[in-house]
Each structure stands twice: as C-alpha cells, then as structure tokens.
Amino acid sequence: MNDTTAPPYQHSTDEAIAIVGVGLLGGSIAAAVRQRGLGRSVIGVGRDRTRMDAARQAGLIDVGVTNLAEAAAVSRLIVFCTPVERIVDGVREAAVHCRPGTLLTDVGSVKGVICRELADGLPPGVTFIGSHPLAGSEKQGFEYADADLFERRVCVVTPHAETSADSLRRLVAFWSALGLTVVPMSADVHDTALAQTSHVPHVAAAALAAALADSNRPLAATGFRDTTRIAAGDPDLWVGILLNNADEVVGGLDRFAGMLQEYRRAIAARDAPALRQLLQRAKANRDALDSDPNHAL
Amino acid sequence: MNDTTAPPYQHSTDEAIAIVGVGLLGGSIAAAVRQRGLGRSVIGVGRDRTRMDAARQAGLIDVGVTNLAEAAAVSRLIVFCTPVERIVDGVREAAVHCRPGTLLTDVGSVKGVICRELADGLPPGVTFIGSHPLAGSEKQGFEYADADLFERRVCVVTPHAETSADSLRRLVAFWSALGLTVVPMSADVHDTALAQTSHVPHVAAAALAAALADSNRPLAATGFRDTTRIAAGDPDLWVGILLNNADEVVGGLDRFAGMLQEYRRAIAARDAPALRQLLQRAKANRDALDSDPNHAL
Image (cartoon, rainbow over all chains, first blue to last red; front, side):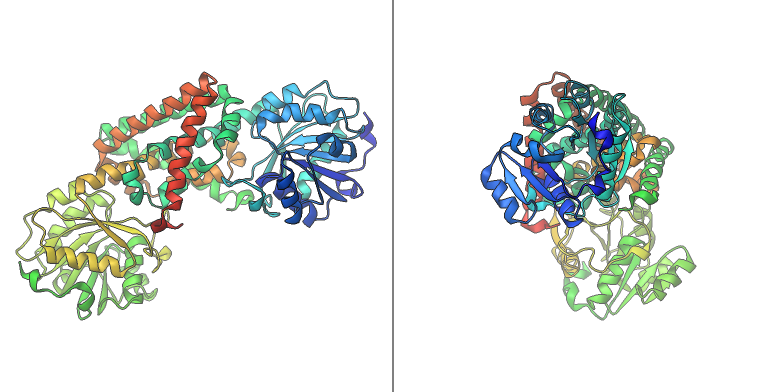
C-alpha cells in the first residue's frame, strides 16, 4: 500500500485535512487542528452552504465546501463526523476521489457495522480505520465547538486484520496530537463496551426523563438533572447509534433490567443489608471512576 | 398555640438556631444562617465532640454540643439534618426540652413516615413541620458545606391539618431567607413526586454504576459520569431514604422498567420511528427542565 511510505501524521503539515460534517464534534476537531497547527488547511464539508460559510466565518475551517469529491481529491486525511448511518456511504463516495495514501476515519459511536462494511472494497492505497473519540456533549452545532474538547479524553481506534501498521500509526498520531489517549481494540469489543458505558445509560436517562410528570418538574433537582442530561441529545443521532448496535444494547438493557430487579427485591422486602450491599457496590464502582488518574473530571 | 404570637422568623435575630447533624446539608444551613445574619447564634449538635469542634473551628457554627437537650432548651428553631431514620426519635427527644413557641423541622428526603409520626404527641406549643430543601450533593461532611447551596433551589414544606398558619409562616420565612423558593404540599404528595424525581433515578444510577465492568472503566466518558454521579452518595443514607419510601419507589421502579421495555421493544424490532418518538419525548421533557426560568443550572 502506498501509505507505507507516508510520513507520520504530525509531519504532514503541507496536507489538507477534511472534516465531513461540521457540527459539535467536527467543529471541535477543526478548531483543535487549527489551534495546534496540525494541518496546512482544514476543509469543512457539509450539505448546507450557509452553515459552511458560517463555520468559516467562525474561524473553525479554512474553506467550506458542499462537494465531498472536491475535498476528497486534495486531502490526505478525511474525518467523517456525520451521523453513524451515513458514514459508510460517505466513505465509499469519498474514497473513489482520493489519492493513494489517503487515510479516512470517522467519529461514530458504533464501530462494528461501519468497520465490517469498510474492511475492503476501497481503492488501492486508500485506507479506512474506525475511530471513536469519547468526547462530546448533548449540545448540537459547531457553535458549541471547543478546541480543548479532546484534552485527556480517550479515543478508541478499531483497526482490522488488513490494516497496515503505518496507517494505524498515522491515525494514532493524529488523535494523540489532539490530546487524546488512543486505545486500539476490535470494533466488536468496542460496541460491547460502549453498550454498557454509553448506549444503555442513554436509554436509561431517556426513560427517566420521559417518565417525569410536568407537575413534578419543580421537584427535579441536581441529581435528576445530572442523571438525565444526556437525554437532551439529538434523537435522530441516537436512533442511528442504538439501532446500529441493537443486539448489544438489547442485551445490555436486559442485564440492566435484571440489576434493577435486585434493587426492587431488596426495597420491596425492606431488606436493608441487601440494599446496602447493592448500593455499596455501586458506590465503589462509581468512586473508582473518579479516582482513575487518566480520567480526572 | 403559643407560637401564634411569635414574630416572623426574620425578626427573631435574638434567638439561637440549632442544627442537629452538621454534615454537608447541616453545615451549609449553618454557613448560610451566619453569612446572612439570620440568627443570634448557631448551635451545632452532633454525636462526635471532635467533629463539633472542627465545625466550630471551620467557622460554620458558634458553638458545638453533643447534648441535644441542652441545645433544644435555648433554641427557637431546630433543624434536623440527620439521616431520615433518626429524625423522628431526635425530634421527640428534643421536643420535651423545648420552650413553647419552638419550631422544629428537618431536611429529610422522605416526609410521609416522619410527618405522620410527628403530627401529634409533641409538648404544647412545640411544633414540627417537615421540610425538604432540594439541594445537596453526593459529597459528605461539613468540609463541603456551602453557604450558597440553597440559592434558587426549591424547598418543599409539608404542613398537616393541625399546623398553625404562624408556624408555617415562620418556616417559610426561614427557608426563603436562605434563598430557597418554598413549595408547600402534603407529605404523601412529596413522597410520590420524589420517588420519580430522585429515588428511582438514584436506583437507576446505582444499577448502571454497579453494572460497569472494571475493564470498561476507561471507556466511561462524561455521559456515563453524569448519569451515575449520584451513585457515589452515602449508601447508609440511601438505604434509609429508599426503605422509608419503599412503596412509592417500588411502584416507580415498575413504571421505569415498563418504560425501558418500550425502548427495548423498539430497538429489538429495529423500529426507527417508534424509537425516535420515544427519544423525542424524552428530549422534550429534559429540555423543558432547563428552560424553566426558576431552575437555571
């Protein structure tokens, strides 16, 4: 593959980087790339001309285009920040216009369906490797872009058996340069883990928020707000995430329902020792999260 | 009752206020009372001499005692900030030492069991009215006390049929002076509402935290952390809360489980329109919370 001769990413400052989908995440990547001087130019790609112009005026991108092919032809790295269900088609569409040595990646919250589809069939020398930077917000739009969004966060990358070491090295160098700690794993392991750490919690938060009676709104304090914050996320985005990891999410929901039943049983039986034990286990797990030095809040 | 002649709270600056249980909440009330000059002196009551001395040295209280009777005899207002299962006994123990006109209240997260028990049997002229300031944190100890904890928060007060208008007025004036918006309701209505806004969300957060595999910890990002933050709360405190509102919590958990099943069904069936509708409803509810002008985050 041609990219075995490509220099590591951080030296490719004479190359353009394309960001497809300039929303909160895409805008933050663009902002971080520009702030850190990581690319000669940042090309934003979007469907809405007006939004692209606004993103350029906001200083996030050097140029905004609505034509993916045009951006693909001149970029050395293309990062897809579109909703998950549009990534596979977008990558295939861009790839045919890419020069050999071009690396494509994404930021989708599910990896299995995307990476299986894109494991082959791309033009020679054009590589796709899945990525998932674990950063974001329930907010939408590049107006919330933040160049420091990725500082001290984790980025999962999901190479497959055919991924060249050099392509992987370039991708790791790119995310590392944005301040992320890169963790490689298989796409399936990622999806199983994320069902537990993100997708099932999202459904739980949504179900709690949906259950709130209007009349009880004044009695929803900080705890409720924290617990349900992610339920404010974009429904369309989350339909894509949840349905593209449906089996893992359903399995995770069943395990969560089983865990809830343990609590219910202890509460219904007024079994204080059992309930205490359950809550202690939960607290120990939650406390361990905050004491992890790699993940200071 | 004697307290019909008592001046509204804000004029009673020549009277002592006792705070029983000087932890995060008690310490914050003490700090707010002193900062706002609402009482001649703030008496902290606790079981641990050393902790009382430390709270005094931290400037939260004027004097710290371990003898409840002593504090009760000289105070005009006594606020119980102990775990819920100790409030009824504490109030009864204090009440016999109170002068007529003394008002006792609490900050417990459940109200029914407490207020039913204390609706009668107190000495003449000594009144108990339940309170629940909706403020707090998963943190423990007066070291986290914050005089501004109550700013723009809601405080539920739960008078019963026999509560005098003047006692209620004094209590409302006290919490209002701390920056809280006071909402009176029956103890049972409170408990039903709080099961939905706090107790069931707590169980959900705990179950999510408990389910997290150690190996997935690095993949738990901001969303997971927000959703499970309250699971770090004191297990003993929460055993008391959940078991003292057990019927409502069990009912709320069943409704929550039913709601989760709706999501599960839509996801398992890959039913995008149904899932979108569920998520939209959740988002609308969550967005309404933030747009409530009384509850700016």
